[in-house]
Length: 169
Image 1 (tube, rainbow, N blue to C red):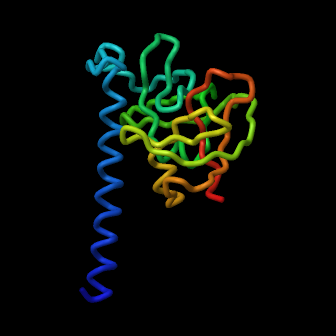
Image 2 (image 1 turned 180 degrees about the horizontal axis):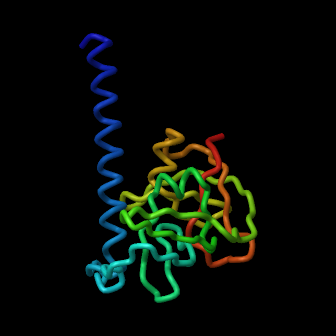
């Protein structure tokens, strides 16, 4: 097989693996630990145009004061290095756009971990504790399983289950 075809095949396989991981992450976000679909009542459907809502970032979504989940774009969370517990302000424009702003970051701690994948989800193993990391961060930094990664975790929350990826090492 010529080198050009081999390189193309390798690229296609990497893209397929990334798409499969994204599908698994999306599936995991809508299923609870028992495999049942998360109650859609927890996702807001009421008209919210022109509203400003403050909430807590849980690693994937913003949880509002009404205990409803508001979707935070994973690219924004990844690029902004949002950490579980950060306070966000969501402004919903009259056009229906969701604009997020971090208004009160939690205390942070930098750590080094090893990237792992389990059940199609990515984790950073930091001193034996697994923290979930966003697929958007994995793809943005072109991370590979087994690679060392610099992550940011909440300093004062030993029960945190999410980390923000700072960079590949």
